[in-house]
Image 1 (cartoon, rainbow, N blue to C red):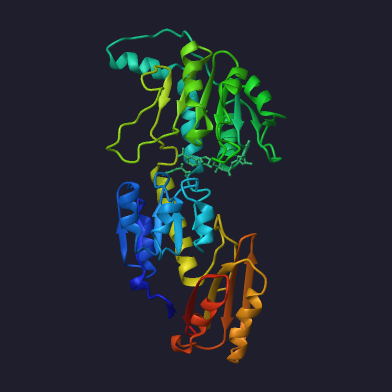
Image 2: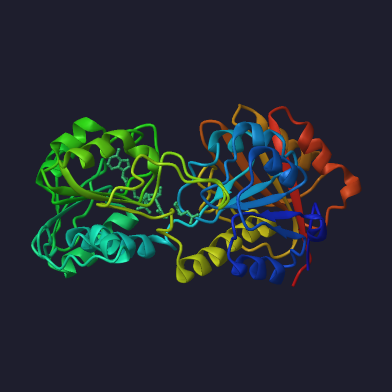
Length: 415
Ligand SMILES: NC(=O)C1=CN([C@@H]2O[C@H](COP(=O)(O)OP(=O)(O)OC[C@H]3O[C@@H](n4cnc5c(N)ncnc54)[C@H](O)[C@@H]3O)[C@@H](O)[C@H]2O)C=CC1
Ligand SMILES: O=C(O)CCC(=O)C(=O)O
């Protein structure tokens, strides 16, 4: 039996954007019953109201956890991003507030790779336009502009979890794969790296983007980079909308320099199903538009639900920050008995010795101490013998140490 400094029935969890039921089931099976689920994302004011007293928040890509929103959630102790991208969260602000953010780095990657490959084939066969014509009662049976993908070159920008899977399945279809990454990557199969983005854009029949949204990748593909692409080639973006200058892309499609494009992500995406989707690409018959569904498969969502819920529970029950994207990672042994204190502080000199003093003065025996720091924040977990009663004031004294951001404690009777 373990006890948290805040009992589980007092821990409020808010899940947004239709997080999969597996997450709810996992949290419930670990004693977390106070769960509020919302189908969609909320605008800033409604979001602030919904998470004002929440201890855990689970979101996907549409919920913006800005500095301002985080400031309104004073009790928030951990965030779960039930997706890969975490650009919708002010990670720095979360860290400064002592809030680790966990995501699911693998669970939807296959789904994205499959969608992209499907889009590549659809573009090669001119399906967006032909589909449109059939819906309007027409019948364009010509082979004009249609090709196989076999033997064509697929250029992958960002050779990470998604890019590499796309590489393998594209080669299985007989495509030639070239990739460009800022980090040296092992080329899978017969794929070959390009020395520069320009080289990749120049040699590819299809360019597919799989980089994260960073200051380096914002507007990575502008009129200049599109200009390097072969006339009649195609662009696919299932990464993040701000990576591509959408007006430049629209112009290249209008002028015929590009033969088509498939977009799953956009610089501005509707926050909810009620909002109208606006884009200069709407109405273009050589463009596939999908509503950010690269990772939206039953398999991916079910796996993500389990994966992120497990990380939230491990952090809450045990203190583990393994897999946190904005926080020093502390790997902890299972807590077998006694008391465990978790202390998050600004990374300034002297904090650890003051923490040890608090235990030393009381004659409490430290049986394990786990510390990780980064430039800004330190996270130390201290295991001590025996059951420390809240009345002893250990936690209060720990919180009085200068630089403290927050602390928690956990008691565990011998199993
Ligand atoms: N459409 C959708 O529903 C989904 C979209 N995504 C997006 O796809 C992105 C990629 O996902 P993963 O492959 O899992 O990420 P990853 O982190 O495994 O791979 C990203 C790769 O991009 C490279 N990279 C970073 N900056 C670069 C730059 N400036 N130039 C060239 N390469 C660069 C990295 O070195 C890394 O190899 C995610 O960050 C997310 O934004 C992810 C899942 C679903
Ligand atoms: O499924 C989602 O909400 C977002 C998918 C995505 O873009 C991601 O995992 O980064």
